[in-house]
Amino acid sequence: MSKHSTIKVGTIDWLAVIFYMALVVSGWLSIYASVYDMETGKSIFDIQTNSGRQFLWMLVSWLIIIPIITVDYKLFDSLAYLLYILTLVILVLVIFFGTEIRGSHSWITVFGFRFQPLELAKITTSLTIARYLSKYDTKIGLMKSQIILFSLIGIPALLIIGGGETGSALVFAAFVFVFYREGMSGNILLFAFLFIILFGLTLMLNIYYLLAGLGVITFIIGILLRKNKNALIFIITAGIISMGIVLSENYLLHHVLKPHQIRRLETLVNPNADPLGMGWNVTQSKIAIGSGGFLGKGFLEGTQTKFDFVPEQSTDFIFCTIAEEKGFTGSIIIIGLFVALFIRIILIAERQKSAFSRIYAYCVLSVLFFHFAINIAMTLGLAPVIGIPLPFISYGGSSLVGFTMLFFIMLKLDAYQGFILR
Image (cartoon, rainbow, N blue to C red):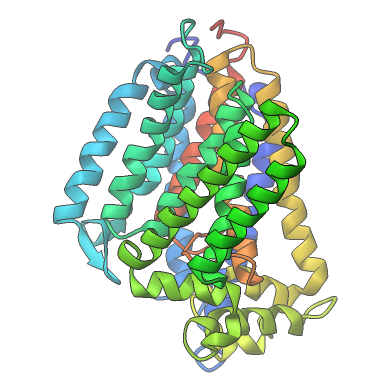
């Protein structure tokens, strides 16, 4: 066997593995708690329950780790583009021939098992970004390079939207942080922040009042800075761009987004607008989290979850189960595990001798952090309900297998940092 495919036990970052295992097991126990029925008292291993099926997916995930750590690490670099193209082909096929679940054509059914290829897209896109940015002749400051990079994340995102998974497609925006880390101008982050602020204002205000307000603000600041020609040009340009963003967002709201997607966004701004509809999830989520108190109600003792007040309590709203049963203390422990894992990934990324390995590690960090931040914010009513699972915690075979592969490819590359030169 090649020295590039064998791994010594000591070269694996076992601290990162411990954080991973702690989160996976915590998620499994929380899934069991969310579906536990006192009358039937089914075992945590019963495959007729979500907890039993999740245990099977845990085993599958751990089996997949074996080929990841034994294959030649060079393949992840050399096959990145090919795997990316194959993933795009699969995403196209899924749109037309995929299994439809809740209006989404994003699933493949094989021998009775369902899997979402979009989880593979996160992995192959990460590998492709890492390979492209690690090329010696790639200059991220050039417009050509930026167009290619945004195309790499935009194409799979659009295909995923075509399959009916708009929320999952938003994850690809997380790669922008990788671009920034590798030298892209911070203006792109400022633009994204401006887009979000204006989008919120577009939801809350009449578009004509908003446009008029932007015009007045631009005019007043322009008057104050009229003696500084460069500043004046900048303010006028920013004002025009802001108005253009508002108009495009207004068009998006009224001609692109579906009614239920618009209601989700409106609920984010005002949850009380539809308390028994779109606002129900967030309201019940907050009640469950608040009812846990400091120490929680105890394992299998959550009333909000037991009586199914919280929808999707084993998937998108799994954090509610944790907060209700383990309270503030348990919630902080889970959040602390994630923070510790993120810090560990940063340390892993920064010690890489290879640009490819470093960039891939930051891709892993961006994807995991985006999922974590949006999911927690979603359960607290700080983000719209868009179906983003909590990594390693939420129920779902596709996400667990996908996150495990994404994570252990990084550990494989890290184990061989001494061999990798580029």
